Length: 390
Image 1 (cartoon, rainbow, N blue to C red):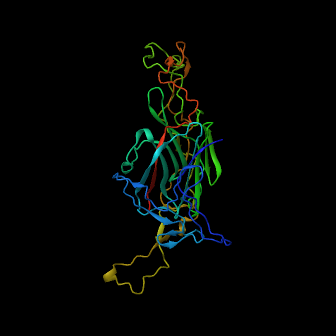
Image 2 (image 1 turned 180 degrees about the vertical axis):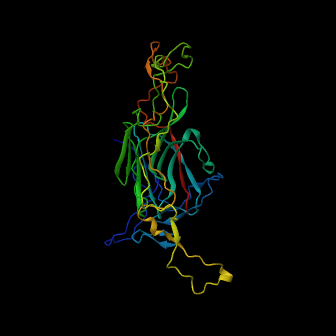
Image 3 (image 1 turned 120 degrees about the horizontal axis):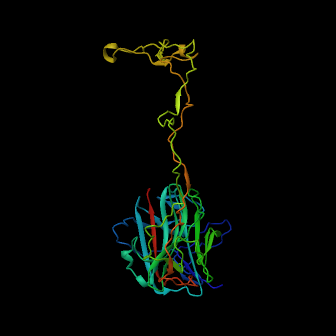
């Protein structure tokens, strides 16, 4: 199988005791269409969109806010770090020529390190559509993309997103196809880098891997695997068809012979006081539930003129322990006369025709893409990062 590789972030490495020479960050990977080790950000442009005001900076994997966090990380390994709290961040770059995947497929891979536990945020790669090129400085949430891939977490939801935009060969309409179902995501608080990989094979299979382990797979031709199927249905409802006025689609009807009995009391309560209950002999109706603590004394430095009259704190009344104190009320029991709201019985409806459905017609927008791995040409890549914390 031949695949076109698109690597966005260099793998981090951990120092080993038997290293003989300093680690050097690779500047290219054999077979990769695009590789970014983040030695610098010269080819990247920060968006000027007003909704993306976050600042990104290059930082060593092992350093967070000026302090060494991962002692085993190699100093030369670095990546983009969010330096603005509760902001959206966005940068992008444009390829010299579009990336096309026909017959070869695609591999997208990047690494993410959470230097502190994430409460709410996301990190996505957007492979920008070459047919709808947008200047990098204009990158925003509406920028046209071919593929969006990456994790986010907010509240109890923590998943890895895979969204493919597919263009109809019939009318040019573009739809977003979200991979549905649970996609496992790595821990949020282990302070370790995690590798995210999305693969589209020449056979139009999708594979999602986290740290090299496959966590989700599906076929692009599977109608149930995506929120909107790649290929539309052959038949659709006729928009000009409508239900006849005399169509009866109620399978049952009220039974005309069913009449509420004269003695049916809808107002009778569900519960009533127990007529057989009697107040216990040890019940103290005149005693309060709480009394001033007889053992409490005013503090030695209490000044009645300045602090007011001292009052002992209240404690449970010991006379209430046997049975109770205060007003006695009968316990409630089920009302034998209770019947609730009367409902008329139903019978089969002799006029029932069946559930109405509009007639089916050929879908004018129908097509069948047998090779959806041939995605819309990719003209660049955008990186979107956001967080709701510092």
